[in-house]
Image 1 (tube, rainbow, N blue to C red):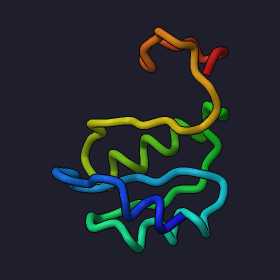
Image 2: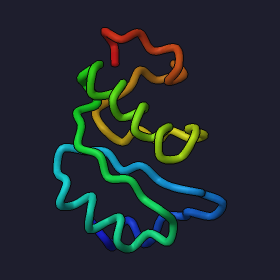
Image 3: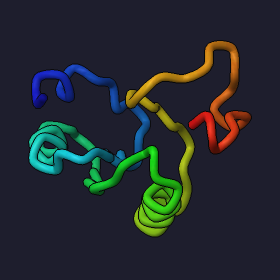
Length: 88
């Protein structure tokens, strides 16, 4: 996991929120990033977890500019903000 994280661009990022169910791997990843990182345990299929994740991200960094979802599958051609909760 750290090898994957070290190859990711963080140019211009003021902070990165890493979310997943395996905190150990996320913490390893956070160690190699060159920006402040917030590691949060959560399941993105849970509405309450997602709300909590966003609250923590905004509390730490003030706002969210970019969202990258690498969990599960998405409907092709549908913008993330337009996905119905049941589809998420």
